[in-house]
Image (cartoon, rainbow, N blue to C red):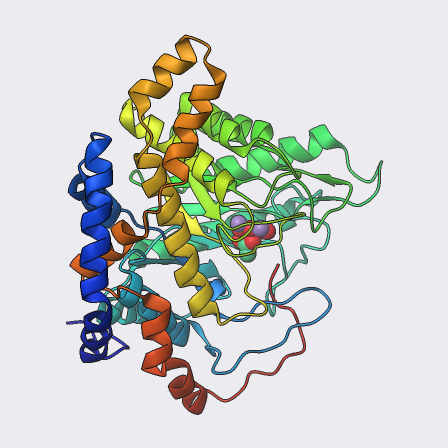
Length: 430
Ligand code: LRH
Ligand code: MN
Ligand code: MN
């Protein structure tokens, strides 16, 4: 039995206000799509089956390295974070799992599992953290972790990853995501080759501890916190890692971890083709790893990424099983609202990609009709798929208008009374 945080009556009442308009819009869109040979209900069923994981760290207010401005009623620990994740799932019905970060979310794993069960939430990939020092940790990660020059530091980082797997086993997780901040700030500071050799040796030790039904995801990032070189800096290095480690290792793409204007959808295509795509950390960015809300800056790029994913699904690409997660930092918005809006934008891009006429596209590509090939994508991208998204939520018991319903529920005001302010001084998140 799950105890949902928003009253079911309120959701029904709010849906009642929108139901007639939605029915109209859905039927009108259905007619339009029918003329294009698309069955709207088949699309809605696919959309209803799509899930994206919420990052536990995303429901707290983020910050920059300059300041953090706390929001009202912020969750004070992982159990309250799970309550907030349950709100997102209850209203969007697209986010049934949470991705935890160790040790940020440290608690008795059995209690975490019980709390998840009570809220109807499962646990997605586990994230290890060797990019900051935990309290009372023996060796510092100031100069690296899995690639550190000192074997004792590397061993500590390996053990931390193994511990993260152990916690995940209790929670029912099936994947470990490893992102390290290792790198250098000055030319000459680090030997690129030796650092990568050490990293690979450490990752092999972590890989050896992976249960048979688990996968390990390595996450590349161009720069930050290291500003001259980073050990796992790009998808090429990431692919090499996945190849070196073995069949349970895959390369994870965080959309914010590339230089501006990089063709990320093409990276996605390459990783799919060579059966090494782990999945995503979704977010959006203008300059760097901005961790802005998905689809808020460049929704066309998100659509083009999903175009590759749907293409792979369509042609039944081997080993294609991406894990979808959000990874964002919310500095000026209510994180619950940002995460709901982001889940909706991710679903929107998926839905638009489902509308691409793949047969027509292929024939335009084969006949080198560049203009019509592009028009084929644009036609799908410019279709307002809002009614499909709302209908998919409605049939699963969610809200037609998640943000409106959330605001009407007074959830934030309620938890603000229950959760005293956590203050606003340090950033606490990258
Ligand atoms: C690094 C990163 C990585 C971390 C998260 C907090 O920038 O994307 O995924 O685990 O941010
Ligand atoms: Mn990430
Ligand atoms: Mn990041």
